[in-house]
Length: 274
Image (cartoon, rainbow, N blue to C red):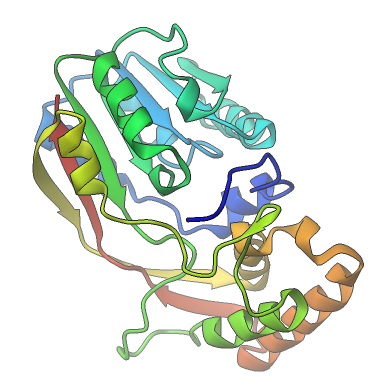
C-alpha cells in the first residue's frame, strides 16, 4: 500500500470508537454460535479487538476470551466495558498481530472484525492457523460499522449527512485519506480469501445476519467521525474545535431534534476451517 503501521493510527479514538461505531447485534453472536455449535466452553482470540466490540458480544459462548490490540487505549476501554458488562473471563493483551503466537496458547475460534487489512496478512494468517485447536475456525467478519446504508427506504428520523461530513473532514485534513502518520489514497487492501487459502485454511462457509434500523443522536455521530483512522482527534491539531463546531452545526441543520436513523448493512461472516 506504500503505507506503514504506526502507533498513532487510532490514537485518542478508543472512547469514541466504543460509542460512535454501530454495535454488533446479539444476532451475530447467535448466528456464529449456531454455525459452530458453541457451548460455552473453549477459548476465543479476537485479533485487533479494539474496545472489545466483537469480543464482548461473543464472550458468553466461551470459557475464556482473549483480545489483542496494538493500541493500549483501546484495550483499556475494552477492560472498562468488560467490567461494566460483568464479563470476568476476558484477557486483554497489548501486542501487534505480527507478534503472535506470543505464548497465548491454543484457541477454538479466532476472529478478525475490521482489523485484518491493517496487518501483515500472510504472516498473521499463518500464525493464527497454528494457534487453532484441531477442528478450530477462523472467522472473518465483513461489516461496516462507521455508518449505515444509503437505502432510500423511509426511516423514522433523518439520515446522518455522511457525504457532507466526509467533505467537511476533507476541508480540514485535505483530499487524501489520512491514516496515522501516513496516507491511504487508495484505501485498504482486500482479497483476504487468497491470503487465508495460502495459509492453509479451507472453506469458507458463510453466515449472514440482516441489517436493522437504529436510532442515533448527535453525540454518537460526532464520536463516529473521531472513531475513524482517517479522522482521529489528533489529526485536526489546533483546528479541532473549529471542525467540531462546523460538524455540530451540520448535524443540527440536518436534524434539529438531534435524532437520526440509520439502516445498518447486512453482516457476513466467512468461517475458515483450519
